[in-house]
Length: 289
Ligand code: R5P
Image (cartoon, rainbow, N blue to C red):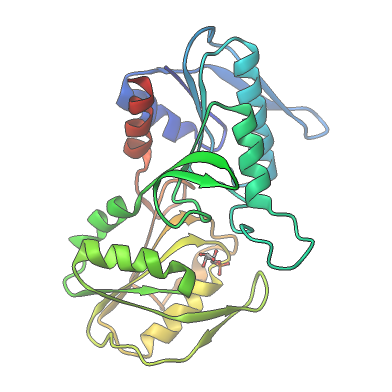
């Protein structure tokens, strides 16, 4: 197998290729003066199984992934796996108002069309892991929650898990099972992409090590509001963990509100403490078998 790293996942692709003892693909990614993306494959891929690892944070990352996948097929690669550790557009996974484009389906469908296998990590539209089918599209969703929890387990003595909204309740329950502790959730009402409102309720977290767990931190407004609310119930510490850390408004908003902030490296940031490389390597090793 040859593992290629798109420009948003160069480090991760390097890790994965070393882990499975596969060749790291050679390629070039450039931009034309008008901003268009240029991709060139410099490795011989004919009759080889290939994987492209590319976290999709932006539309440009997506176009780059499309170009990689199609170029590999054009050059005679046998199987081409598309690995999207983070898949943007995944939060519009339902038609909430008639007429809306279902972006999660559209993106998944296009990537599936250009590849032999689609791999994601805790993607927003699948509240579970393993083999998934979403709008008849098959994909494989890897699970980084156990790795996040192993990192945290040794750092919290009396934990309890809080889901910031009802959508994250299943994940909180699962994390609580791994930690052997209780869990609860908060009710969040989203007013707009930037604004959320928290509904009050009583929380039993006094002197506990609270873990607020979400799949994605985007603007950070959900976590900032939830941390303020949890703080009123006098926990001992507040840790925040997520799979995909986008931090579109930076991390300063969490200062003084929480004791610990960690994420995986599906999106690289200064708080990427948990490496999803071994998970992806394990998956690709199975493809190789
Ligand atoms: C939403 O359903 C997700 O699970 C997260 O709660 C959401 O993406 C957080 O967004 P933000 O950081 O912008 O409040």
